[in-house]
Amino acid sequence: MASPSSTNNISLPTCIMVLFILVEAVSGQLSANFYASSCPNFSSIISSAVNSAVSNEARMGASLLRLHFHDCFVNGCDASVLLDDNSTFTGEKTAAPNNNSLRGFNVIDTIKSQLESSCPGIVSCADIVATAARDSVVALGGPSWSLSFGRRDSTTASLSAANANIPAPTLNLSGLISSFSNLGFTTNEMVALSGSHTIGQARCTVFRARLYNENNINSSFATSLQANCPSSGGDNNLSPLDVNTPTSFDNSYFSNLLNQKGLLHSDQQLFNGGSTDSQVQTYSSNSATFFTDFANGMIKMSNLSPLTGSSGEVRTNCRRTN
Ligand code: HEM
Ligand SMILES: *[C@@H]1O[C@H](CO)[C@@H](O)[C@H](O)[C@H]1NC(C)=O
Ligand SMILES: *[C@@H]1O[C@H](CO)[C@@H](O)[C@H](O)[C@H]1NC(C)=O
Ligand SMILES: *[C@@H]1O[C@H](CO)[C@@H](O)[C@H](O)[C@H]1NC(C)=O
Ligand SMILES: *[C@@H]1O[C@H](CO)[C@@H](O)[C@H](O)[C@H]1NC(C)=O
Ligand SMILES: *[C@@H]1O[C@H](CO)[C@@H](O)[C@H](O)[C@H]1NC(C)=O
Image (cartoon, rainbow, N blue to C red; front, top):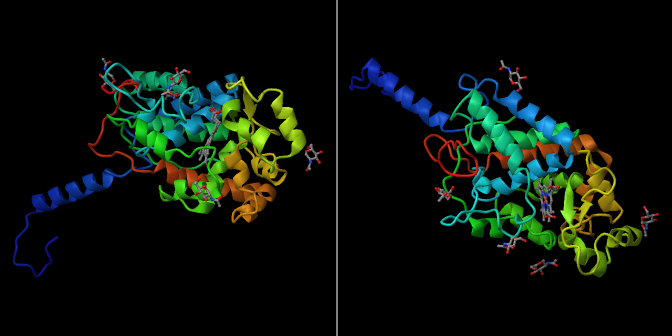
């Protein structure tokens, strides 16, 4: 703006124009009331659909939470993970961490079609995924958090980034720390977000080596899992990530780690004599601290490099670009 002493004479319309451009620039960020006038009922449509999916199958809450993680860790929360492969396009669904593993796409489709009926072309798939993840955690008894909206959907996806950025269950503690720090997360945030494994299931193929080759596992726990995860075969047999309460979002994931009952190699790395042991102990005895840190970590994750303003698009079908 011109200062009062300036000799430039900037007209009122010009000032209004400049102000408008500034407001536009700010609205390129996410905002809590993004859909307030364009789709006021969007959040109740999403929470109703999530509640019904989770009451039909509790694990779906875990699957929807993971979907958001696998979206955001690959070039930001842009719904890239939802794009289907076809003869001329390869997306992220066949990346090693996703293939035969990621779920919840049908629930997202159901929500999208309800939103397209209520407010066509308005609510992005990326915002649906972020909201469904939050509502899933709430539906399973975990904390809620405030989201901002206005993420737009990508027109691209990256198989190679999905393979590179999503942490593997074979990582050791330093690998887990770097994988999260590459995206701007502290070690504390990594541990808090790992508490997601208080819900959901994993396939034998991702934890077999832990049952047969590792020492930092409770032996009766290992033996009980071996029945459903033989040393060969049964790759897709499922076991709960939290042996105690797999459909409750609570802090028992961390108590399990104290008892060497982490399911994944990567889980037990968080309590294995290293720098994160004390944080695991804190969370195992104080669920309120875990919930607060988890919610803050999720807010940070949900804000990873969104497309905003006129970047990307609002897909009408989450599985394909417009
Ligand atoms: C710390 C590094 C992490 C590693 C190495 C990891 C790895 C895995 C693996 C291997 C599975 C089982 C996949 C399968 O069997 O096909 C899994 C499941 C799951 N992960 Fe993670 N994960 C990590 C962090 C996270 C984070 C940050 C979240 C969410 C914010 C998350 C949410 C979940 C959920 C909810 C499931 C169960 C999904 C279901 O039952 O459908 N994970 N994770
Ligand atoms: C908003 O959506 C919810 C869930 O679908 C529905 O129960 C409610 O009647 C809707 N309200 C309005 C004003 O459309
Ligand atoms: C994904 O899984 C399918 C079914 O098991 C398999 O045929 C395919 O080779 C896998 N794709 C990749 C890229 O690993
Ligand atoms: C962790 O894994 C990396 C990569 O496999 C390896 O280079 C490093 O030595 C390991 N660190 C520890 C402490 O075992
Ligand atoms: C392993 O877990 C079982 C069952 O919870 C428990 O009774 C046993 O004491 C644990 N073993 C060790 C070595 O901690
Ligand atoms: C293949 O998928 C891409 C990404 O969604 C889309 O742009 C393209 O139109 C699709 N092609 C066909 C033949 O469906």
